[in-house]
Amino acid sequence: MDRLQYRQTLAKHNFKVLTGIDQAEIDALCDALLEAKRIFVAGWGRAGNVIRILSMNCSQLGLKTHIVGDNSTPSIHEGDILVIGSGSGETDTMKILADQCKEHGAKLALISGHPESYIGKRADYNIKIARIGANTPEEKEKAPIAITRSYYQVVVMLNDCIMTQMMEKLGLSFADIRRNHNNLE
Image 1 (cartoon, rainbow, N blue to C red):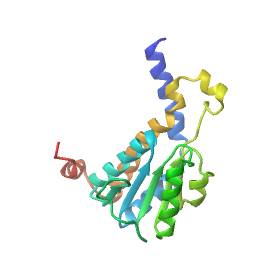
Image 2: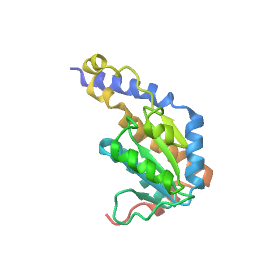
Image 3: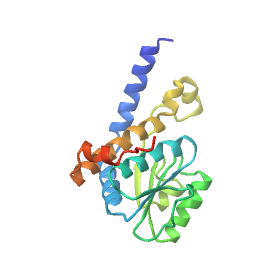
Image 4: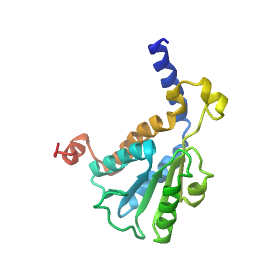
């Protein structure tokens, strides 16, 4: 296998997926994050790993943010927002968290390939990550494994797009970000 060609194929695919996201959905989520008293993020597996980047980015912008499941996470209330990262929007644990979020009067956002999913139907904000070319078992079998997992790669890039957009709205510079960067390393 030509490794350079593999990377080029992956980059072209992820370019199509990232640029296919509706900017209005990103704008709405950015506004909701900036308006929220506190931001909570949750996800399971790879989706959980990449959604944590959003929390880290928000903390570097000086926003109050928490990762659901950490011992220091406070209770969620009206005025807060929970952002769930879930490729399917059907992860059982995330469905429970979505219901609890709504029960406590908080806003709910979903970054997913399926806005029509259980969580998507309950979400106040949906960012749809399109699944291109690896939907059926046959397509997945033929596609490079990285393309079958492009949701996770694109969410990492999307997190940076969200951070940059909020950074601009807040009038922050990279010096401000560095000031809030983790220094307990």
